[in-house]
Image (cartoon, rainbow, N blue to C red; front, side, top):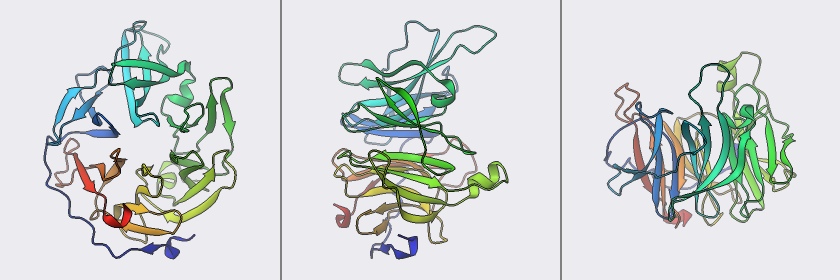
Length: 315
């Protein structure tokens, strides 16, 4: 459906909650049963950032106790995600302190915060050109993943299984981002740009995207929302009825939206701003999101984590 064919429900966007907690430079969220996890920039950390638990006061609490690799000098953690089984998924990168050819290796692991143990899902060394900046979305049984290399000037896509490894996938788009597998495993949502022009990075970043749904085998691809800009997140609700997305639609400014992909109904949840990485609470009653410099200080370390109540219309 065209964006103009969707129905904006009569709902007043929530004012931003009080900006509590410690501002910082944040770049990822995952809401587990045990609590909310944020990726925060920490200049003193070897990778430049760490994962932290977020307290109810929206202050950072303890480090997430992810074990380092025993076979490497350096271990880096990237791009936290809640996995279908409730564990924390992340890119797990290791390296050695040597001069010369790169020694970094990437893989994908699941971290169980109840036992502080890691399980390797995509073994190291995975191809650096795929997982170096890539993102991974798992089906509910976690025996199949859809992987993108996350490149803005022409993405590559892959299925991954333990038996087949990485197998190329053609989605008939130039760029695709923010893959999200529905909780029932039947549908994959993603934002895709059919073309990005020839103007280089600026053209690619400014090109409009469509919101697609496709079946779990990548068939039956269909557009459910057209002409979206400033895409910055996409995730299914725990009950699979709604999608939360960050985008600029209708020629307006960027807000956090709820969209019912079946009816086309949508709700704006926030006033305009700069947001990214929306994450549903496990019970579906709240959504956490990063608000970038909402006080307009012009500084790069003044981001806040905010939580939004999901309105009754989407419950």
